[in-house]
Image 1: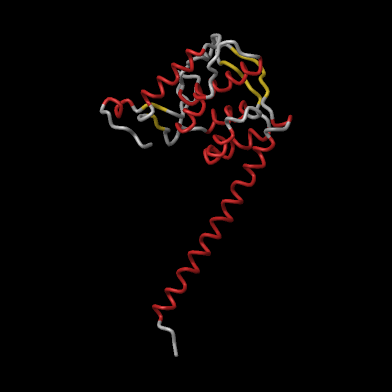
Image 2: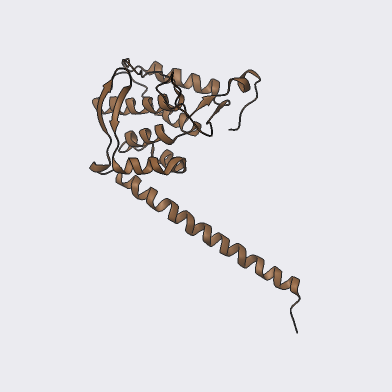
Length: 206
């Protein structure tokens, strides 16, 4: 007795769904395997960023390690994994600087939250703070707590001012499809405020 065609179709559909899920799982593993490998390498001495000097104008200049460069080349797909690692003090500097290159509006609250609440910083804390402020500057184009000429000494008021700015604008920030470095800014301006949407009190989903 032959099985009706429509019944055979019902049997094929679950098989296709399972096959699709297996393929997506394999694809995800292949995608994140090199990312995780490069993130692990950030913990090693050869994975560390090197601060070279500051120029006027231009601000701080860094030399990225090989795994940092590889993660930057991966683009925005690595951001979710990097945000998970941003609180780890052992690789915080490296992660913040990678986010300065590939981050979007989702990175802002993470970076702001990690700014110090105290004024007297150790040498290591000062460097980490510079990396966090640099990332915020590069993403938004806003020179708050860091300057392309002469950066001021850190004070917790910068953290409070960043928090205030974010709370006022978080519903109206977006990442352009093709971010460009404007000639009047030293930042990458990957995150912009949609002022028309803000004036209309119409939050943007971009």
